[in-house]
Length: 204
Image (cartoon, rainbow, N blue to C red; front, side):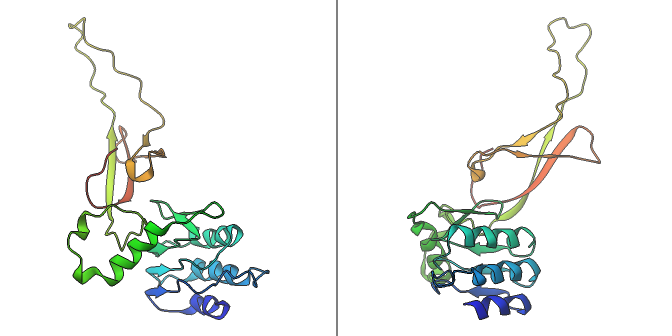
């Protein structure tokens, strides 16, 4: 596992599956494998889709891998089922001890191996947050602040609220966790953000 992790830093592979390889074995007390994998993810800009699922990575291992992943902006699909949870923004969070994420692992297997024979797969609910396997697409969200003044002759016209300084996107694919939107430099009354979203209806 260590040799593979070290070699990944110079690899030109675009797809890689190293799941079920015990790369986070208890024998690796120096955490050399996860450290090497983190370093490789930080510099490898060729890899687009990878699976490191069910490798017995510890919480500290996953935190190390997450550090390297934050510097990687080319990896579009990642699987860490069984060891960590990938959120909708592509960031890793560790799993509680003893927890299992078999649904995500199943999604990975079904999508990659059974794809030609499975009907209705486009309607599956996203469970692994892999942008490639689940065919996520980039979407722009925008919020406009109305600035038209009320009619001075209309005494019943509502008063416009003050222009907010902070605007947040709250969406179901983020489990309703707010994400701050950016002010549009070209449109002073607009806030925007670009996000990868899963197929199907999106509620926000």
